[in-house]
Length: 220
Image 1 (tube, rainbow, N blue to C red):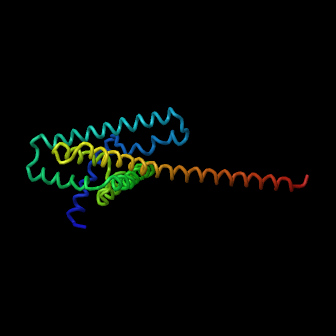
Image 2 (image 1 turned 180 degrees about the horizontal axis):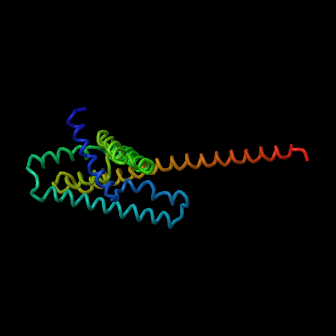
Image 3 (image 1 turned 90 degrees about the vertical axis):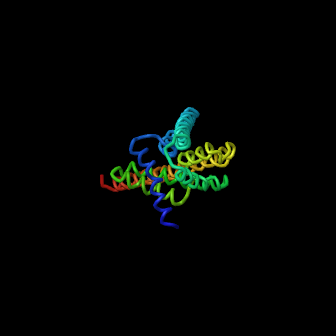
């Protein structure tokens, strides 16, 4: 692995740090806590609210990414060499097939969801956790729907990608992968918490039974 790639990956983390530090909404962050009401009570109303939230946040992220890509393409901000560098960064993403997009999306979704979960317990280490999780996503080259949408939109505006390819090769597989990865960590943690509650309740019942037996043995 080249040193330049490792340094380049550091830049990947800056956007996440800005978004999370500013309290903004990223789609993969919303695969964690918003799903709790559905796990606790999987009603049609809760599912509909979850899907509405996911749709709203995802649409906002993609539109924002497309605007950023449009600025990069059509505003005279960068030199031709920089534009070529943007293309060289964006092209490798679209070289993946839909299966690779989906499986890589699971990993990136899991890492971001783990980061969000850990932040709640380690607020003082927020920036370190954000950096570590997103740096792993970057050096692992795992596709992420929000960051990837900027690259794909850039390729579309530069006529280096086609809309069906962007939709069916990138957007749908990566979004599904991010959802699976993000909700998997929550389901695992929720299951562990439920198991801990069950064990505690069982110990309480055993303790109560022991007390009752001892009381019966006391002389009248």
